[in-house]
Image (cartoon, rainbow, N blue to C red; front, top):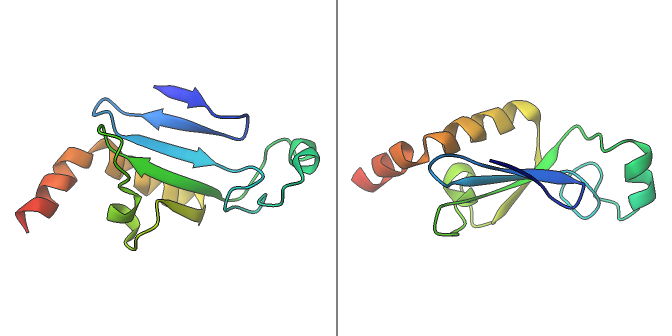
Length: 102
């Protein structure tokens, strides 16, 4: 499922009910972080990177499981890195079970 969020990003929720938030507008950790919303609209919502967050079917933040650390968001993620995140989230249950086995 896809969901547009405040005109500056989107959510993707996979069949396993795990969600990735991709945000690239004013206030997000990306090249458009400046709060100048007029400028963001002028560049037509284009950004070379984005802020992302990941949460599981229970609404628990799991961004740190992919990136390490303790942050609920990861800033300045480029498209290639985002692709890796999406693949990981799609198979989250499989990856999560491997972590639990360790």
